[in-house]
Image 1 (cartoon, rainbow, N blue to C red):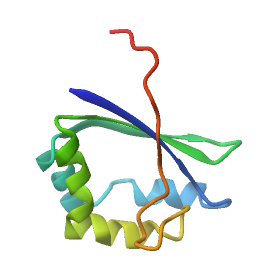
Image 2: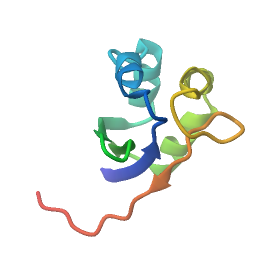
Image 3: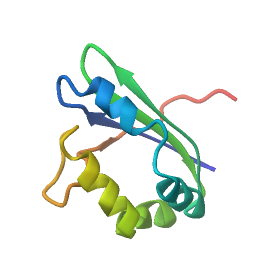
Length: 104
């Protein structure tokens, strides 16, 4: 497994709505994630900075990146674009984090 971590930025006042839209996420999006080798996926909110910290375990970088090409992912991005910083294609602005320590 490859461990992925990334940071996103939530717009002020969107904390409750962001959580609501993830409880639960769409079943078809969950299926796409599983089909693309994603497991143990969590998102955490830093309430003071409104940063979202994402963590996922993936099987393959190419599979991970190909999620963005699926129709359901594009639909999800359009659904979430009012919640967070996004690019013109509605994909979230995301900064990948480098792992510097891990303990099993």
